[in-house]
Each structure stands twice: as C-alpha cells, then as structure tokens.
Image (cartoon, rainbow, N blue to C red; front, top):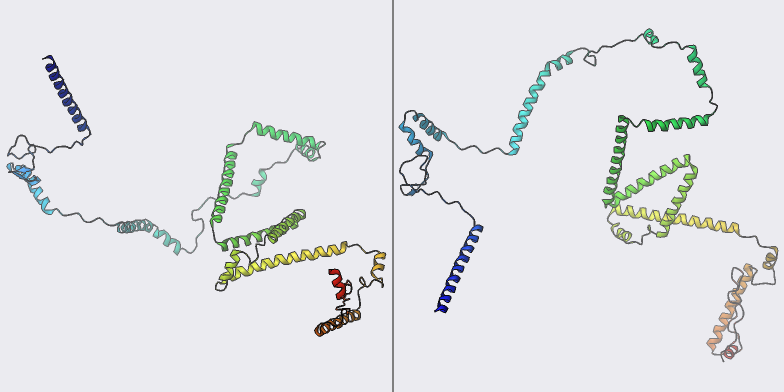
Length: 422
C-alpha cells in the first residue's frame, strides 16, 4: 500500500511540474510575440447616433459614418441650421487641388517676379540719369567736396630757424667716428636688447602670419601642380614641358655667364656630364621598342614622323659631338707625341734595310709583276702534271705600303716540304 501511494504521489508531482513548465514556456513566447491593437468593439449597442456612439456597423452593415450624417442632428435646433447649410455648400463647391508646378516653371516665375521688382527699384533713378545725359558739362566727382588751398606763407610757418646749439650738434654728428667697430658692436647690442625687451607688436605679428600663410599657400599650390603634371600621360605634353625647361635653363645660363663666370663653368660641366650619360645610354637611337612602333606609325601619322625626325636629329647631334671630342683627343695625342731622336731617323732611312724603308712606286710595280709571273708559271706546271719537283712553286717578295713585308721569304720546294712533314 505504501508503495502504491508513493507511486501515485510521484505521478502527481510530475504532472504538476509539466503543467508549470508549459505555463512558463507560454509566458515567455508571449513576450516575444508582436502585440497588435485590437479593433474597437461596442459592448453596449445603441441606435443613437452621437460622438460617443461611433461604429462602422449600422443596421447590421459595415458602413462608415460620414460628417453629413452627424450634421443631421443639427437640424433639430434653428441655431445650428446655418452650420449644416454652410457644410452642404462647401461640399458642393469642393474641387480637387491643381497639380503642383514643376521646378523649371516655378524658377521661371520667380525670375520674372524678381526682374519686375528690380526694374521698379531702378526706375527711381531714371530722372537722375536723364538729367546727367542732357547736361552740357559734368564735373567728377559729382558730390562736391571742400578743397583747402595752402599758401606759401602757411607752409613757411611750419618750420623754424635752428639755434646755434643745434647747428653745433649737427656738425659734431657729421664728423667721422673715432672707434667705428665699438660703435657697431654697441649698436648691435642695443638692437638685441630692444628685441628682448620689446617683443613684436600686434601689427607685426599679423603681417608675419600673413607672410607665412602666403608661403604655405604657394608651396601647396606648387605641390598640387607637380602632382597634376606627373599624372598626365601625354607624351606630347611632357615633350613641350621639357622644351620649356631647356629654354629656361639656357636663359639662366646666359644670365649666370654675365654675372658669375665661375658658377657658369660649373654649370657647363654638369651639362656635359648629362650629355655624356645620354650618349652612353643610347636613348635616342631607333633600336628601342618605342622607336620601332613609331617607325611603323610614321607611314600614316605626321606627328609620328616629326617625333622620329627629332629623335634621329638628337642622336645625330650627340654622335657629332662625340666625334668632335675624339678628333680633339687625337689632336692632343699628336701634340703629346715625342719627337724621334736622330739615331731612330738614321735607322729608318738606312738603305740596307728594305723592310723599314718605304719603297718607291716603281719598286712596288716590279714586285707585283714578279709575283704574277711566278703564279702563272706554277699553274702551268701543275696543269702539265708534275714537271720537276725542284721547281719553285711560288716566290713572293711583296712589300706593304707602310714599308713592312706582307709575305716575307721564298716558299719552300715540294721535296723540302715533304722532308719537314716526315
């Protein structure tokens, strides 16, 4: 029995816990649900129409109550009859509002109204303008001002004759100073003391700030201009800018040449270095990709032809300058060559040395004819098929124009060649 009672109690407790849990879940879900305002419901229906008994349903039909139905209650009194009459006339005359004008038309109307207003204000001066146009003579300024005339006597009264003491002091001040260096140092010390004791005034501070602001504005303007120019990708624009820069540099160099010749020489050395770098890099040759593409376009594009011609002219100018430098260097080398001694001259003019002495034209012709003779002779022997092993095949004693032998010595006979090979 006790076991059955305990089992029943456990079941009841579990049911109670499940019910409480369900209630808790329902309450929590209601918190997150959207709360909607319910429709108005008449709990006490009435057939009386008044402001306190408003409803959409009338005689079991869902109808809206209009103002005219409410105004019927005004007919019960004579004092309210006029109100209902006005309401009826207003409903009869009621019309829809016109469409609002567009912005363009409203602006046009406003401009026309403004023109009329300014015209009315300016028309006030028509009489004054007409009077000035009709007048034979006008004196400017039109408004008369008081002019004061100063006489010589008045100006002389402003000055007075200096006294003897003042004249003596002025003469002393005009005399040269005995210690000018000390006076200058004392003056500088006074200026420093004044600067320390008396700071800048308000006007000076404002002027200084204006100068700094102006410098900053100019600097920012230059920076923005440089950034804008760097973003431009047009080659023609950069070419024009480069030419303008070159012209400015030439003008500066001419001015510098007149003012400071030493600085002009330094500037000239820098220009020569840049030109040497251009020659080394070979940027102005027609071997680059840009130049090759330009050659293809030059057949149909006039600007491309002009750009190509300018580049070739620049490269030619650089090469000409390089050749001039080479010629100048060769001339310097010739000047620096030492004069040969008397013993060397005698050796060169020695008649017993045929390899050093420059031969005459007759000697050269003789040697060339001799060589041709032996060449033809050797060919004939080879054609016959081995006539004489000891015969010399070729003998060449040709001399170069400079006086040195080209092929010195006789060529060996065939037996001697065979012996050397063995």
